[in-house]
Length: 286
Image (spheres, rainbow, N blue to C red):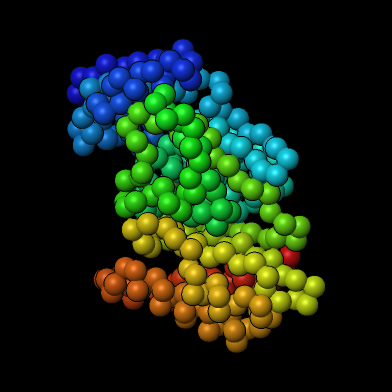
């Protein structure tokens, strides 16, 4: 492995001071499940590595009046075991439970998953479906909050500045009656990189019409995004089987519009359509 200086900050202020001076030559390590392999293969060559897991304010899950806050060094295991998240954001918990195996979930963090910005990240699509926002902090500019949808610029690239740390993930509370689900397709059941995943968030009104719908596929596009055209197709209408069938076709078309036709498109189209229809059926009978 290459040589670099490893720095353990004593506090948030200490970490921000370090990045203000050395941020452009540094990488931040939280769980290390993505960074360490990159260092070993010398795909990443920083002069400094800033170790943040021991900074207590960066860890934990808190409920506030209108939202929840998740610390960036909160592990996937801690998310899965959180009653707060299980009660309010089941799809997010399902996505966290699908990450790697127990060793990866015990070490990997939500902040690292976001900052790595992998197209195959399991948690990112679920966070997007829940309207996640990111709290970033630097010594020079203080705090800023941005939508997660604007933070991922391209595969493995975010809009984070070199002197910034991701200090929190914010999820607004969902309206009563909102249902959500997550499903992942991999080559095998455990320790598998996602070939495809899908997050759905659904709410019906008193007339059984769709009043809220968010559809976010993952691992099928360079950057996960909501499928706006498919969502609009169902909004304000009763989700009858024929409409869901038509929406599944539109969903596949939206995916191909982004990715173009590839060798994998032939299998991805029917698989995405079938996963979408199955998940819609599950949410409608909850």
